[in-house]
Length: 142
Image (cartoon, rainbow, N blue to C red; front, side, top):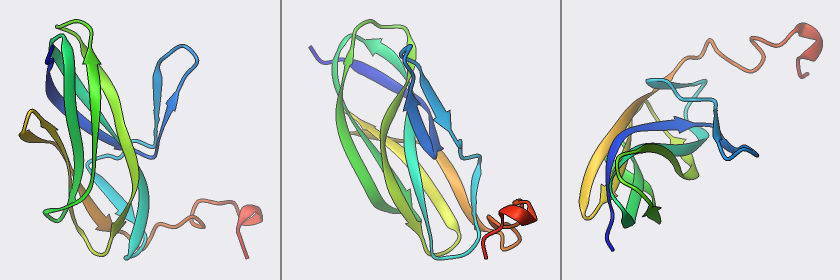
């Protein structure tokens, strides 16, 4: 039977950990903008999508990242919906994203041929931040 899902929101983070009790822990959530020290920049990102389950069954879900309008990463997975009415966050995959300049990164979801942008993130440069800026002098690399 074909299931039905509605995407509600999307998140990007550095890492998703599966806990012993079955919960997910999201590490390093990306706020409205991802700030990098310099371009070009590379950043590992995990995509997490919050869905509402509308109808039990199997649903094929595609997730993609668009950088400045160009699809740069895409994954497709099959989700089994056991009951309607609930909401759940689903880790949809991860990639190392590369950025060559400031711009917008869009997280999109495709269900039954319909694509929806569930979140957008600005990518910006701030030369004043670095790994060294917050480290105590005794911990700094030479």
